[in-house]
Image (cartoon, rainbow, N blue to C red):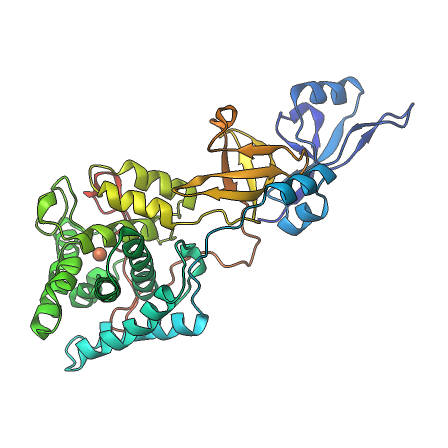
Length: 410
Ligand SMILES: [Fe+2]
């Protein structure tokens, strides 16, 4: 959302609103309130006491470039002093993403093909190369955009993130290659769900939802019929909705029976679903999604959660964020450092005050959090368009975690 400027009555001003004009004392010429200030009760009282009837305020997040331009000297100095570059991040070219996305689409449409296994190997090869060819230990999953179609893009994202998680988890190269295939094909069973269920816009009936929950079993069966997928890949697909507390599906397997591939894919799958806009839900911010994953300790493996925390980059060093206390914005800030395993708690520098806020190590700032600035209109958002497992429009997915994960939310 771009900044909106509007004139409002000083009687309706509330603390925390941002004034969009400078108020000067008419007698002395002194600047009393500077444009861009977040008004507090004292300043609002001042405006009213001076008989000022209305002022301009601005709403919405400013453009990051604008913030950069108006940064204070102290902020510039502290940013230079405090900046520590991020660990290398996974970067995959658009071309590779597109190719892999198309490859996944092909596989969803050709599950009966004789060269299905070979095709899946070919499709995964490029992705494995891209993810494992450098020292990358983290990624910003919203940077990926392999396809406009939810299912295919989700498959590529889950495979990519799973591989990175697997790498940080300590899997071997051979295991990572298999994990890539399992990630790409984890929802392949959706190709066996009738379109009228997949594409249903309204709420699924209990029977339909039960059928949707069979997709991981269908996926397992598809791979088993081919006879050239390893047990690890097949279990990764079969068990990606199983939970450590035994309340997952399709079987409700107990923790000790859930393969590590499935444990890893589950984290990547849930995270990707949380941060993606679907027809029936708005996306959660990455910060909130990370907090939700952290809280799923009875469903997801602790080691996989911890690995995830070390593998995800939410606020890249150099990006602008808003620092807030849950109620109001404290100030806009620039990220200068991330801490391993704590993607939510970076060190930032306020662009007005130049104040350094170490959200991880300084207990003064425990109550503060940062969020990304809202995307400008027209900017890409992570939005699902249509799904089409066999070139068909996509359905609401049962994958989205929901409270208790029992009821489809649509
Ligand atoms: Fe799934």
